[in-house]
Length: 533
Image (cartoon, rainbow, N blue to C red):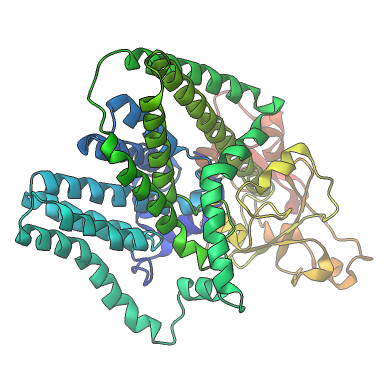
């Protein structure tokens, strides 16, 4: 998985003890990942694979259990849902928990379908548990969660008491959430959602902006998201284009062959109901963002809406096939699904690669810092100087994918959280500056690094007096780096970017069977005296 923009979640998974008020379970996936392996991303990668494929499988299971489409078509719709191009933040790890919210919502629907077909108590209990998990992780799905169980009222197979039981088990978690949250809303305690809502209604045009935001969301799901994939048709992505093309041709051929086999009877009477449900899901899934400042964003806001987008594509393709002449049905199905899957695969490959590159930019900065300062004392301030005039490069152009348009390698205070995680110290602060005049730097207890054009970091051993005379006299980095220790094992184990041997110690000091933690290093603060540490 791409490991970009998730430093807050890593830190919270270690330090957060109590449940948060507005999102009680938002850090649950991160805590589980931390318990699997606290010193690497093994847990995050494992849980990411589970939730991404779990979402697709749950969506597939619902389609099949309701017998809306054939098995091959349900499988293809699940892929479109998983990699729908409307959202450019599919692999944004700061939104990792929201994927779990969608997953649990789909599981709740699956349990509801089971309860409708075979009203057993375990199915009703499963509904309640999974609805609670989804709602307590993120509020984005609330409009959908509130509307969804009303379907039970139209299920003739259920008795009156079974319908009431289903509604009770579904709404009980929401009632619990409201009882917990309402007192906080009337207190002086601030929560994240109130500030986010205030940012969306700060002027008189908020109502019109909300309507426009929803219309833009529909356009994004139906048109803009797909058109944006055309921007990825570049030579630098040739490998991904080739893989997607081969996969699309293969899937198109499989669909064509399967279409020739007489299978389940089509159910055209489902078309308008499912199409309407898809349109409603897109709107309700996006609505919580439309009343905030995120209304025009294209990342992490379409996770629920992608359900509706995939439903509509699947039903439109099925209806188109239904009306085509018999001789063209199978060929058309193969072409449509082959092209569609190729497009979503290109989007998925390129998006993941771009996040991975941004992640490696951050890793390189952190590795370079630790290479030059394996040990620092508590209370240290780390400063990364970023030249605002630094020449833009092709690799730098893609780092805006997550929607954070700045030339800094880290967003806001996530630089601090990243360094605290690397050094395992909570009393370290880290800031990014474009000039000495614009930042509050103490100099006396500070390590200053220069951000380089190759996305690295170089320690400044001194500060020119003409830049800051007082700072130049106070700044002494090797008093803070009191001694050199073996290179910390955590970044070796966790990062894709490996440290440079030459920057840890001269190569001739290193035996062939030694690791970084066995090396002799030279303590520069003691005039180059070297010793085993």
